[in-house]
Length: 325
Image (tube, rainbow, N blue to C red; front, side):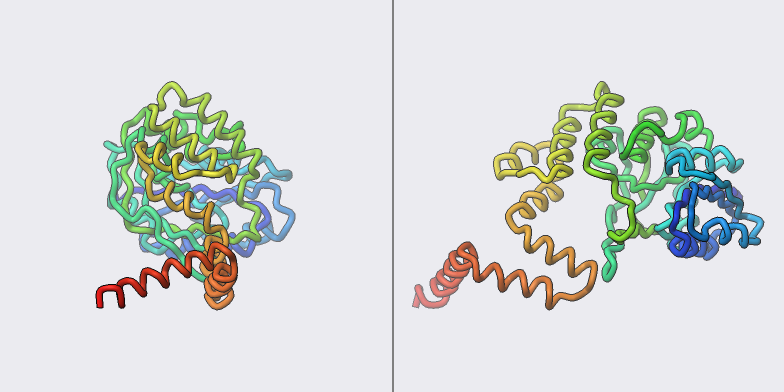
C-alpha cells in the first residue's frame, strides 16, 4: 500500500494560526505521498491570504464566501480528491509525524476502515485514549465512538454512503462510521496514538447541549432498528452524561451489565466529587496542582462530609496500628 497517494480533507473557519500548525503537521509526515484539500468555510480572518500563499503542489483549497458548515466542507473536499484512500484532519488538531505511515501499514480492504488511538490535549497535559489494538464491530461502534473523529478509508466507500450527513447537528462522524461498518464489516483500530485532538475551551468546537440531544434523537431514528438492547441502554447513559443528570449507584449497577464500566464508574464518582473532577481538569489544563487538588482537599476537609470521612480514616488507621497491640 505504500505506493498509494493518500487524500486528506480539512475544513477550516477563522482559525488561521491553528490551521498553520495543522498544515505543518501534514507537511512533516514521514510518508510524503499525499494530497491535501482544504475548504475555507467563509472565514473572515486571514485564512484566505494564508491559503493563497501556499506553494506546495500537493495542497489545494476551495473557498466559501459564507459559512456552509463543516460537514458540507468535508464532503466537498472528499469529492475534490481523486485518491483511492482518504483521511481527515480538523483545523485545530494535528497529525503526529508517523500518522499516515501507521494507518497505511495497517490498511486492508477486509476492514471497513482503519483508525487509531489518539491524544486528547488538555493544555498542560495530553492523555492517550483507546490504546489497544481492536477490531470494532457494529455493536462496539453503537456503544461508543471508539474510532475517534478521523479514519483512513476508501474514498469510494465514503461517496457511496453519501459522506457526512449535513442534517445532523452533532455526532456526524459517529453516524458515518456506523454506516460504513454496517455495510462493509468491522473496522480496525491501531492502539498506537498518531493524532492530537485539541481541547482548548477558548475554541468554539463543542456542540451545544440542544444540538447534541437533537443529534442523539436523529441517530436513534436512523439506526435504532440495528441497535441491540445493550446499545440502546448505553445511549440512555450517554444522554444522562450529556445532560449532566444524576447517575445513582443503582443506575451504575443496572447499566454496567451492558459494558463501558470504567466510563460509567468515572461518571458516577464525578457526580459526588465534582470539586475533585474540576480540580483534575484544571490540573490537566494548566499543570498547576497547588491551586487545584490541594485547594479541593482543603475545602473538602472543611466540609461536614470531609470531617466525617477524615474521622473514619483516622479511626481505621488507629485500629490497624493499635487495636491488636
